[in-house]
Image (tube, rainbow, N blue to C red; front, side, top):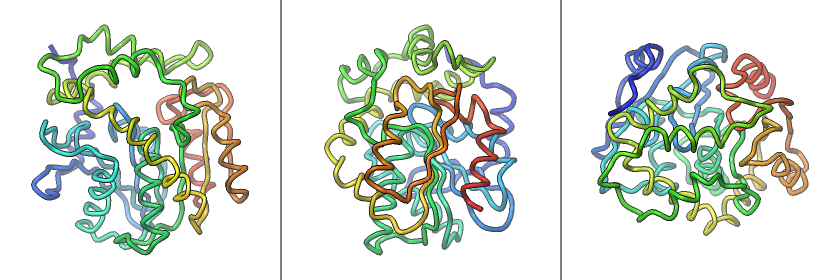
Length: 288
C-alpha cells in the first residue's frame, strides 16, 4: 500500500499542471513573474522537495518533475537517461516560452544541469543559461559514498520491478542519506516515501538508479561542462552529507577557480528540506 500524500504535496500538485513532451506527461509547478529560476530535483524524489524554498525565491520559478519521478509520466518502456532528462528540461522551457534562466539543482539534478551546461557551451541549448547553483549531489561520482540502499538497488535488474518496494526498506534507505548531526526534519521521510510511491514510482527505482552508471561513463564530459561554463557557478553544500561529501566542492574549486562555495554547517544531503529559509537566502545571494 502506498503512503498517503501529505496535504501540502496535494496542494503542490493542484498548483501545477502537466505538459506533453513527446507523448510523456511532465508535471510543472510554475509561479511568479520576472527573471526565471529553474529548479531540477534529484533521485529518488521530485520537485516537491523544493516546496518550502520556491515561495522564498525572486522572480518566476519553474520546478518540474523529471519523467519517472513525482507526478510525471512513469512508463516502464521510456528512456530515463540523463541525456533524455536534459532533453525534457529543454523542451519544457521551450513550451513555457522561457528563453533564458538560471538553474538551481540537487543530487541527480546536478548532472542533468551538467549536460545542459555542455550544450550551452557548444551553442546547442534552446535557451540562454545565465547562472548555475548546485546543491548536494555527486558531481564527482568517484568520490560518492553510496548508501547500502543505493548499492542494493543497483544490484537489481535494470527494469521495472514486478513488486512494490516495501515501505520499511524505503524508509531505511532514505534514513541512510541523513546523519545523526543532520537528522531528517519531522515528516520529511514520510513525504519522500509518498512521492516515491506515487503512481508506482518505487517500482521504477531499479531502472532510474542507472543514472549512477551513466554518470560514471560520462564523468569527463560533465566535469568539462561545469569547468568550461562561462557564467557563474555556486555550490551551496551541506557539510554533513554522507553521500556527496564536502570534498567534492574542494575539487570543483581546484578545477574551476571562479566557483563560489557556500558551506552549510550542520546540514546534510537535503538542504531544501533541512534548512529551506537559509538555502533560499543563499540562492538569492548567488543569483544577485
